[in-house]
Length: 167
Image (cartoon, rainbow, N blue to C red; front, side):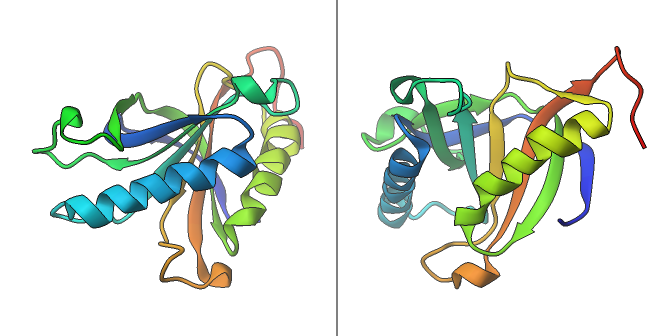
């Protein structure tokens, strides 16, 4: 796994699409709508990365309660009522554990599981379940081969005050 570190992410206003249901089915639909909107609206400057936010652990939450948001940083002159495809959404930022993933985006679920189940507890952290897990997609899958795609997987964390990190 790539270098993993704790960072602070700044808040951001997003032009976003929210979908409900199993991530494997709904996330591609949300991204299709974001790409459609980007192709139609041609924002300037064009966003160089996208935000994918997951709300709910699919191991513990029913499919009908899983929420996914796909978005890009909203252009400064954009008003959410200008589009019926996307709406405004605020990413609050905060403290996150970040690791870079190079390869097919289909591998991201395994990376999240490894960080959540092993890396976080081993290093004296706790997953902050009040915030979404974030993936910052740095490659456009329409133009970049899956093996060359780059993403930053970011899990919201805080220090576990009950335990000291284990070696």
